[in-house]
Structure formats: C-alpha cells, structure tokens
Image 1 (spheres, one colour):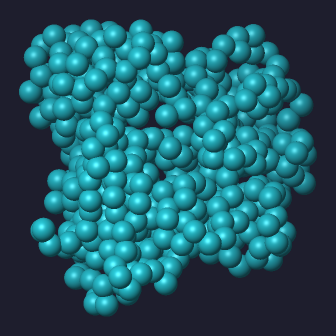
Image 2: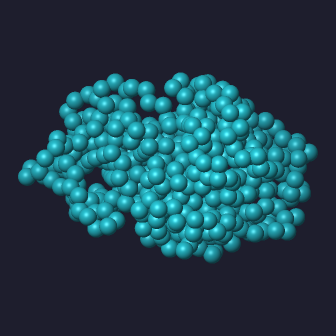
Length: 522
C-alpha cells in the first residue's frame, strides 16, 4: 500500500477547495473528494457578492455584538484580497440604498461611512450621497416618491468559477481531485482514530483512502460526516434556503445595483446587474437539507412582489432562471431557528477521533476558514506546516497585482483570435472573465469553427464546452452549462437549446450523457 496522504478533504465547495488550495501551498499531499460536481451545492448558488455584510454591521450596532464587527471587518479585508487576486472573476459593484427622507439618508450615510472605514487600505471606493436625480438616472424605472439615497461599493464575482479555479489550481500543484466520488464510511485505527475513508464512484466502484488527517468540508452535510465518526454527536448545522431569480429585463442599466435593507419581514433584498439582466434575491427560509435546492412558488412570488412594488412601471416580469441554495449555518445557542439572525461566523471542530470539520462561514471568508482549518490539521499532524509558497490562481499573473494590466495588454491579441461577428467584444469579455490570462492560449488551440459563438445571451463557443469536459471535470450538461459557464443560471431555456450539443461532446469523451434537460437543483 502507498504511503497515506497528509490530508483527505471531503467536499468540493468553496471551503473544501480553499483548504485544498492552501494545503498544497504548504507542501501537503492532498486529495479532495466531491460526491457530485465541484461547487454543485451552496457554493454556486450565492448572491454573487463579495461583501462585508451591511446587515451584519447594522446588527452589530443594534446588539452591541463584537462578533458581528469582527465578521464584517474580516470579510471586507477578504473582499479586497479577491478583487486583487482574481480581477477577471471579481469586480467592484456600486449599490444604491433608496430613502424617503433626510433622516433615513443620514442614518445610512453614517453606517456606510463606518463600513468604508472598516475596510481600511483595502477599501474600493467611498460611499456617497445620491440626489433624487442621480438615483433616477441609476435606476430609471424605480418607483417615485424617493428623495434620493446613499450608494456604496462591494464586490461582485462568479462564485462557481472561483470555486472551480481554486480546485484546479490545487490540482495543477499536485492535489488529487475526484468528482462523483461519494464518501460512504470513515475508517478508524484500532485505537479509534480516523485514518481514512471509503468512497463510492458514480459507476459503483469502491475506493479506499488512507490519510493522516481527514477534513470534513461538506457544508450542509457536515453533520452526516460527523456522525460517521461518532453516531451520538448532536447536530450543529441549521439550513436556510435562499431563492434567487433572474429577470430578463435589465433594471440596472448603469451597472448600479439596488439594496433594500429591510423588507416587511426584516430581510435584506438585492436587485443586481447580472449578464445584462437582473438578479433578484434572496429569501431566507428555514428548511431541511432535502428541500434546500428547491425554490418554492411562494418564494418566487415573494421576490416578484417586491419587484412590482419597487419597479411599478416594469411591464415585463419574464423570468429567465430561478434557483435555490441552502446556507450552512451554525446552530445558535438555545436552538433559535430564526436563521436571519445567525452570525455567519465559522468554526473548526476537532473530534476526539481526529476528524476536523470546518462549518459555517460564508463565501467571502473561505480563505480564513481554510487557514484556520490547516491550524487544526497541523495539530493533528503534531508538527508545524511548512511555510506557504506562492501559488497564483489559474488565470492570474505570478504577481497578482499585475493581472489587470496584463489583461488589458492582451485584449487586442484575444480579439484578433475571435470570429468577426457582432458578438466579438462580448465574446472577448466573456473569455477573459472565465479564463483570465489563459484565454488567448486556449482560444488559439481551437479550430475556427469551435470559436464561433453559440448564444447571444452568453457567447460561449464549442471550444469552451470541449475544454470544460476535457480539462475541467465537467461530467454532465448541467455541470457545463450551469457552472463552467453561467448560461443556465441566466436563461434556462437558452441553455436547454444547447443540451444536445453538450451531450454529444460528453459522449465523444466517453462520458455517459445525461438526460434531455438541465437540473439546476444538482
């Protein structure tokens, strides 16, 4: 038998991929096992914001809770990190908070001034007053009766793509990456220490993994893995479902999003620019794991009702896509099931058997979660980890701060490789946003016919579809069209049109093609 791995990671979402990425940077021998597709769960279903959390800052004031302040500060620093590390995946987004009177405007201006200050040197732009005319210019169809508002900046990003590139970067540096590989059992030594796992592949093959440390990074499924280690453990996870829908109408033509800080039932609602359309979300409904990815008709109507209220002039409420995702929240003390008030902190737990579980948290803080997890791993290995070595994210420059400049420099080269169509500029934007600095080299390896754009919604091409299947672990049409590109998350009917082509390519690569339609719940 070969030597055991240093680290076996269960779960390929944001936290698992981040742990794998940070672990290989420290020279560990790593394998990551994902039961479905990379980022197939919660991590591809976020509101697409890299943010400190304006709601958490307000809660910190109202409850005098230092944990909320720490969370906001940490998340704002991490927002700056990702905007620098992956500027092709993440960008600054300005959001407007509308107000009806000067008191409300002053309240938000003071709060957002503190939000800016907490970001420190990683700030991305100061908040500002919005006059009535400025608000109307930014959001032309917004309802009348508002006196203006306040605008502030946060980050918007492609969650599924960042998740994938973290995993692929780790794989390129030596980590083993296995999708469709579901863990069914944890293995123990005679002394009761976790020493590996048994997994089952999609075609029914059983595999045995030996590792010095096993990390549970399965989000909502954390309790299931914890109970493989100890069936008597109390549950730690609380699941809340967030539903998003994408309107075909573009309510944010100037690129400024809308934040409604307090709905009738105390939720926060966003309406954001999204691939030339409008992303509306999110709901917050306590649910069980089985229904976490199933948007209900009531939740969809809830979101549409707020669109009608705030944009009464909008006549077309056509929905291009709708999806749901479960938030893996840590259960609060007293078993309070009001998930909207749960602090989005994370916790790293080490059981007596040695199983390390990283739980809670949110997308923006996946890197601190990974670093804390590796501290627990080092304790189990009973040795300090080697110093971190630099590992650029795939598509980024060796020196991350140079990525934006290099993207601009290679723009002409990329456009020259693309077909001379009306979509050429949009196609270059899309390729850069997916592949960063790797785009020209990839496109240069595709035939002329494989570079032709296939859709006006997102100008993907056949070369990308083939690359997703051949080099990015995509194994189904949903993997390709919902996560390797976001077409299914923007316009499901348009994505359905391309399913036969994707299934043909899957078959060519020896993968069993899926059904004739997409499944955004998986």
